Image (tube, rainbow, N blue to C red):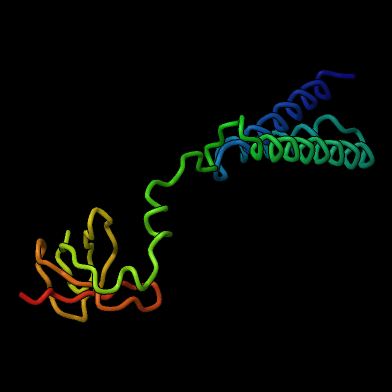
Length: 160
């Protein structure tokens, strides 16, 4: 084995390592591009014949696929923190699941933002996205839920 083949094997190992690192980094960036270049260059330098190129390419692909399977398994486990997966619980979702249409219709609250015609309304501590019937309603004005249509909470200014 001459120095050129040894350098090719080192480049191939570096390329596969960079591609494995790329699996854990969201997006396609410097490790992925560098890994592809190093792996291809390493295969070209280490192989003496077309058969060796095919063999090294197949082995490299199998190693990378194996690492992908291991990483998928690790990312599914709850013990491994992933930069891609959301690990925190979304707060406040229970508030919206417990309200039925009938329970919300007719409730009064306060406009938390200006409604032009959409904005936010506070109904006894529950903040909802609301929609007026096209009219401008100022922040702080008392509002009343008139209807819920296709998950849109329609409001009007509460009569004085």
